[in-house]
Image (cartoon, rainbow, N blue to C red):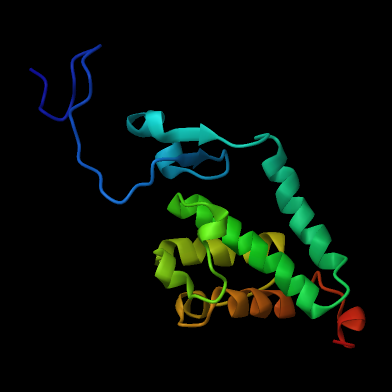
Length: 160
């Protein structure tokens, strides 16, 4: 006899109540979560070229390396973080305000660790999870990541 946690082959999954999801979940190969769960298939939309996501990560590093000032590097980081938050929260990019702290968008400790790991891996910048979760606006977090990035050419950024 099967337990109540499993379904008979071909039987629909049991109903579940989910609150707080938008009407559109962007599918991104690099992210797990809702976009891969079959229960949410009706809400998932594919965006752009999925092969381009790896290139986008490399592009961020190249943009940081080619930044002419720390302000330009901070703007690159700000856009990157806004994209991460928009995808993770299932909202449009233009709904993310850089003058609000990340916790206002529901960024929790797990997502902060992901942002920190991406900053370390793709931007060669070390930032603490506490800085990401602090009351500091997203723009200031981005500026801090850019200022600490080993990819940003210090010589070209001293003339800010």
